[in-house]
Figure 1 (tube, one colour):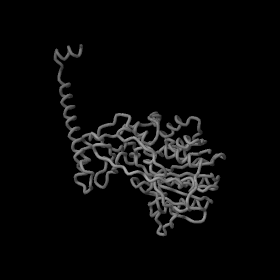
Figure 2: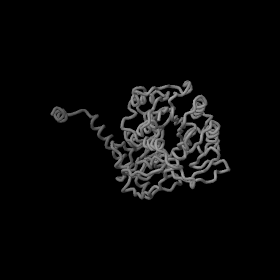
Figure 3: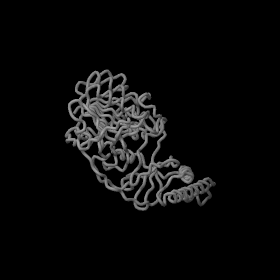
Figure 4: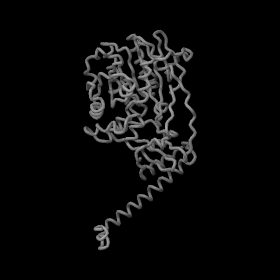
Length: 402
């Protein structure tokens, strides 16, 4: 199918669809670092900047993709909803659809969209699609199911004019296996910037990768390794955790700071999820109505739902349409991770020791041990610097010359 990608970012959705055989005919993105990546990775695809200045969709458009900005929808963001300056750009999707109805529309966003403003944001979206004659289906999907050690849930929403989107999105389901881990056998991901209300704790995985601050300060997760070292993943491994090839975002450094690559990756769609979606677009299955449940009448939105053109239904289905085995997190990492600094570790330890949170047995002790190691290492570095600062004697000069 011919694909148009709005709010394309670094092209995760389009890259996955291309792996499933679809062709991107237009990319729309206006952030310079992301544009640099698109120019390098999709050199033959026409690009457009500000979506507000895009007058119409190409006549060949069969699938319109829009991973519209989530900053105003995220629980970690401003939660301004669709009235926010960035997430409100979804209105541009409907402006373009009113001019030319794409047969299939794919939206992607954070699960908090289901709850924001009492669900009114999603209500607005589905009302618009229904008024344009679309059937729709949506589902929360977890990247963890696709062979990547990242626990990342996102809402995928499909609207269609001529096909049943439930056949595309809601036919496959898999019960994930239970994961049994121990601190001395598996790696565990968490956010060292938290510690008072939560950790984002993830056994044998990292929690959802974040986009960092608006000025490009990264927010990498921490990983407690089986040898009880605490590290943060190297940037190329972070790209791999989203399903990209290492250095996929390196072209962004031509127009901005290296740290902005963290934001690009954190905002992206996981590539294997997009590929699965592309395969489902190509070969839809048959949705079984036995999954249908009564749609809530209290305004709450379920984690999966559909509209068949007449009625809305809640859908009983998991966030894992399939389950692919993956290597343990500590084996997945290909590049040398960065040890969590003594200062960061000390601040994190203070927060968890003063909180009322419950932790896995041995976790606090592991944090204390890592802090001891880092402080001992810092002391050794300071001693080495002090030694090097002394004027060299004759023996030292002889050793240097040798």
